[in-house]
Image (spheres, rainbow, N blue to C red):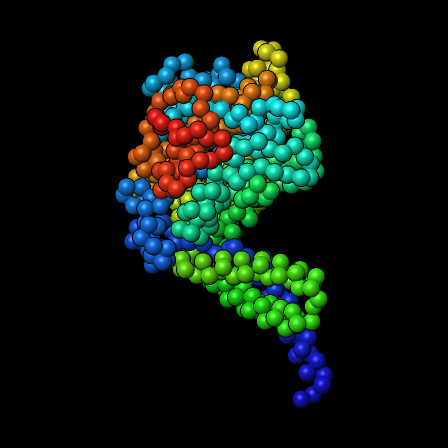
Length: 467
């Protein structure tokens, strides 16, 4: 063989390998589940998990049961948020946009996060309100040595995540900040994350709707995504085989320190391999007949709606049954000029009971309710496998980690529970509980998902009855 031709072939092979590596890195996690059609449900994949799996995260009709946690910032104006009377729900001014969904929601009063209250560590109510919301534990005050708790969404994901392509979905409309100090020397990790897979590990949320969509359904246009994803799966497995073979050869040449580094690297590689094997178990992916979102829009309301749309699609295709969504971190100081509020939200929340500022904060609270109402309507309009709506077969917690943003209180938090939980919840009312940990609500929801072995969570004192 001519040496020149041989060199060119080697260079071409190297370029091909590098291209394959790039495709591999770009395509991780792009393969997703079948749409949630009863006749197409991947029962063979679930059977391997044992007969108990069929009882997890399903309704009495066998349809998937979804759970989501949606967080809004800076509390709410109590006088505008709470309904005047218990019982059948009469909507307050802040919740008026939810009129069309009134029969599908319940307002829950009396839920507290005592672990977010000030203690010996002093100020930092925004960080605590955010970090405690789904964990129910006291945070360690440090900019670098973080410690919270496993969040309820991740606890549930560990128990039912094997039923879907993605164990959970984490969304945000904030740019992630994981390090350095934010509120009163609390780590930014507390304030910019809802989900925690361990006390020291926040689960990064995605804020770009395009990346969320491509993760769920693959890149490309409608009609092309399945082929591109299949090719990407083959490339992924090929590169993984190459990496593992190469690592085995390399291992013999390394000292103890480098072997430890290689082991850490291979742990990540094997995790990716497990994801590929899991993806293959569920078969082909859905291919929604919609355009891929272009990216992050400049309009905050449009951004929120795109992310809500991603949640609807993920639930509709049974890509996941657990989701969390950070609308904005607690302490967010975004302005809302589009509704006549040019001042910063956080600045206004310290209104000192000045009527004009209170009115403006209430308008922002109502604006967030309007965004939530649009999401609930989409869930209500989307039919599930059993003929009910997605909303009927869901449990959606909507709330904030501060109650009164002016005083930084964490008792009687503003909380809505939307959906019927497949018929196990009683929406359409206002229930005033008597000072119960928010963690009690999480335990009650976990029971409905079939996670009955969860005896305690966070600062729970029992189950929340009457939901």
